[in-house]
Amino acid sequence: METPYSDEITFAVFILGVICCFLALITIHRATALQNSFGVLCKWQMYADIAQLTLITSYCLLSEKVAPGSHALPSIIACQAVETLYFFSGELHVLMAVHRFVFILSPKRSKRWNESTTSLILFCTVTSIARILLMTALDSGMYWVYDRPTALWFITETPMTEFYEMYLELGWSIAEMVSILVLDGITLTQLIIWRSEISKERRQNRHVEARLVLQSFCQCVPTASITILYFLVFPNIESQFIQFMCSSFVLGFGNVLDAICIIAFHLRPKLFRKNNGIEVTVS
Image (cartoon, rainbow, N blue to C red; front, side, top):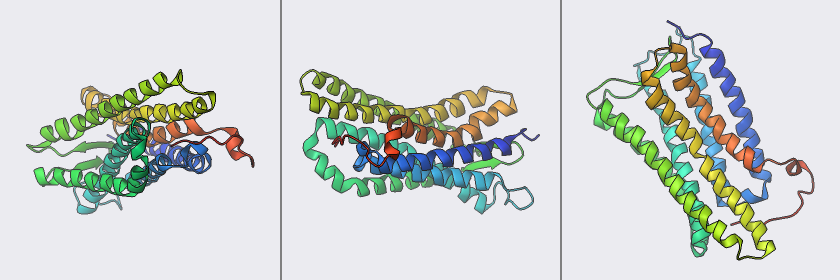
């Protein structure tokens, strides 16, 4: 049985996501607070989100007449690539939290971090690919599948599927979110403590720093949405349409939320004026 309006919703999410991601990229380019290595991480986040949205939409909207079978090699590669981009996005979220933690609590290491930003992004890329290869290593018959008639995503059933979902999907995502919450919580607490001890000029800089930490904190929302809706709600729902919303919809909309986090914290009308106003230095 086909899921009603699944193609239309998928395409609408793609259009909204691309618009938001490009608006976020413009914001990153113009916002003073993002002219640093944190902004570089945000930029790569948007590149990954655009790539994932494009891949999801182009693959999911193929008609059954021309699309490869769900278990054909091209389909497996496409679905595994989507998951790899999801892994990469999640690791960038953690990297953002680590970035603020290091720059606020250990500023002496900030220069070394700036020099290592490209290497850290490459590390996230390698570990994301390694995670998807580990899935195949555990069981060659275990991979992600997009069921075209129902428009649902799922992992093939194998003896290792439950282990993989519990520890390398659900467990890993929870570990990422806990890491972000702990790191950002410590960083934000330190900024609050310092607030009463610094001058007005430095306080303005710390306000910008706090905004970056809060942005990093909010980057948990896309991961939390996908983790809760897909792994906890999806298995217990009978309605096919709600299953679609907890699967295909939330997978694409998570990219939209990534962009909204950047837009919400940094997009201001003054960014599009010739004179952006006061320059605030931020690490």
